Length: 270
Image (cartoon, rainbow, N blue to C red; front, side):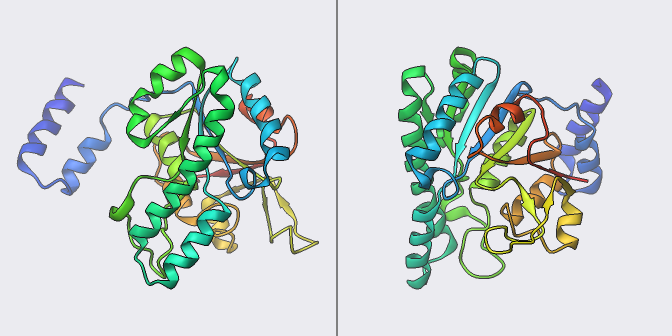
């Protein structure tokens, strides 16, 4: 360990940060998971929160019960209001960085509402800058709420086509799970998981219980249930090597998924 660290330090002083030998040495450094006992759950904006009380209240009750046994980082999606903002801003020829800020404002609104519903149980909303306080919240009340939109703002990477920000709330929640080294990443949607086609419009769509990123891309499913840039993040992740997509409108699904059960679609890195 000491020799590896010393060699890495020497390379860092002498080489470019993209030097192949330096990158190889850095990859051999010991991994450290900051919150290995925590799970990130992403509550869909359009699929759950936009449905209002009927969809949100049962999930709130499930979260309150689950936090007795699990440490939860609860991310929120943006949903329909963000899509409306994207439509207006794109029509005004505004760049992806501006749309990223607009999407973040809506995800923050959803986080604020969910945070208020959970406030009496001590579960608070934190801003992106407040993520450094997450360990304290988890130690005290086993839960915290955050906006799922990554805070790239005007620094966001432009999309290959169009101006819709490529990294949105699915990607943002995954990045939190990966950087904290969490044990699970669960996406709470309004479908049982991934299908061969859109089950809302295709009656004979078949459910897929488990699939890899490469298989999704080969079958043309990479832009379906999750934002497809998130799949590339999963493919290159060090800690979170699979995610689960579940139907949050079915009572008990979130509780079962947090317990490690396979209740939706598992998407694996390889």
